[in-house]
Image 1 (cartoon, chains in turn cyan, red):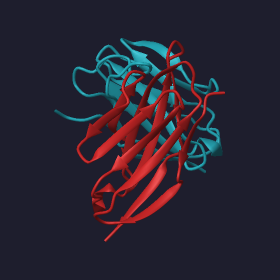
Image 2 (spheres, rainbow over the protein chains, first blue to last red):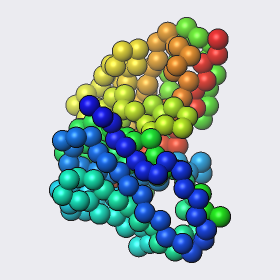
Image 3 (cartoon, one colour):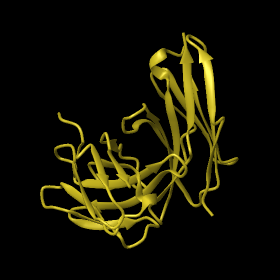
Length: 116
Length: 112
């Protein structure tokens, strides 16, 4: 069974631009969560989607948004990029919503975003 | 404020030796605690998930313990291998609020 895939793997943007990242979950998984990982802050939760609905949202500004499609694939968008948005963006999938439960989350390899 | 503190920040051990990583949390109300292993340049991989009623869980050479009274967890690695070199991240979930609080991780280097 194929794992979680994320595209693109690497991305370079300039301040003020916007970016869209894509995540394809493991086949059959309906829950997708997004995380930001930086050396200073570590891993931080962005949002969680299940059956095309956002179930939970972390403490990030409105410039960060996402959506989930009927095939469970998910995208996240960051508008008006800032230097501090440079990070590894990870998505994880699970059969059912992962937060608060004990279902295993499977992470993708991440998208490395660099903002210049 | 929900917090997860991991210690040590980094650790170097010789191949074949055992080691123990610590995780202290103040997350409330507690739902579950997860340990992840993250190799450089890759996404985290789940090692164990423990709920309030579980105090030990093993996954091969990895054994996690949980003391919900003192709000402490440990991850014990037995007979370390070079492939154990990675960052180990402790994550605690709060029930009712469905949020995750992440530790900053312990960077483990296993030396030959």
